[in-house]
Image (tube, rainbow, N blue to C red; front, side, top):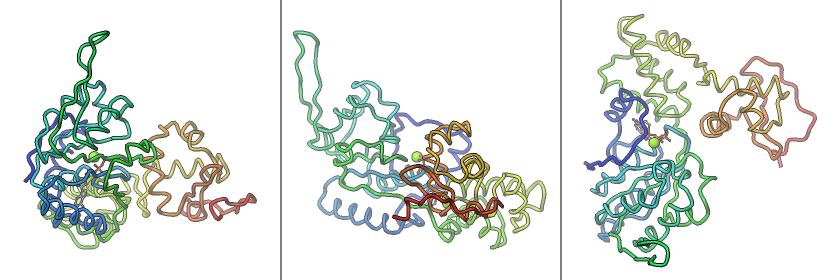
Length: 343
Ligand SMILES: Nc1ncnc2c1ncn2[C@@H]1O[C@H](COP(=O)(O)OP(=O)(O)OP(=O)(O)O)[C@@H](O)[C@H]1O
Ligand SMILES: [Mg+2]
């Protein structure tokens, strides 16, 4: 099992973190879903191990809650390495990154979450560290300033980001293994939910789990959160056992509909349809109208609606599709403008 040294980690609430930590898969074998990504990773790990070398640098990208942090720990665990955890926004001065690099030992994993938020100065320090395992530091200042190169042990950098588009080209090109996480199928989520229900000692009828799996936006973190909500609801409103009616009423109370959309998803679609007549509308305009951060819409809301085929992204902006209209109970009016996304 990987030993972990936490340098910094933004908190999501301690109770949730403890809960999620207990439910985290620890090895490739335990990891449900992301089959092709897991296959690539396990080949890379086996090859590195047989060469007695650290693994290539890995860039994990995809929407929040799909398992990037979990995977970083799984990789380290499979390599038998120590993980050092930090994040883009936590590294503000050169001393922050130099300090971390200096604490690494041969074969360690350095996990940088939200790597798209690294500033340009820190990136410059990372390039030679990633490429040649060395770091250049400047000693003294003014006329006495001189640069010293410090060799580093060979380590593996694992970067995670929800926004691959914001990673600079030079940064991206230094990762040997860029990997995209996909939304999970309802079948994978079902497996995760069954395992977690067993871990929590929750009794269930199979249709109850299937229902939660279909309403979890393809995301294990959401599945786990809904499982907890439903478990509480079943204790208070039922006999503790998860049944389909219990799940349906518990999720209705959470504002999650039959397609797994939550209130913010529906607000996004409704705004696009009612205010912007189905689009095209720019994301900034939508964000301003809804009163939500653009980043939240781009990172959290849009990827799932795109995958569901409820929204398309065109050069002029976002458009609502027929299935969005129908899902929200609006009459579908085909737009007269040609849809760029068709070409
Ligand atoms: N394959 C999986 N099998 C079982 N549980 C999983 C799996 N992937 C993720 N999880 C669960 O989902 C939760 C969220 O995963 P994780 O924190 O790794 O997501 P993330 O991609 O790092 O999200 P963020 O972008 O918000 O940091 C974890 O606590 C873990 O319990
Ligand atoms: Mg994470």
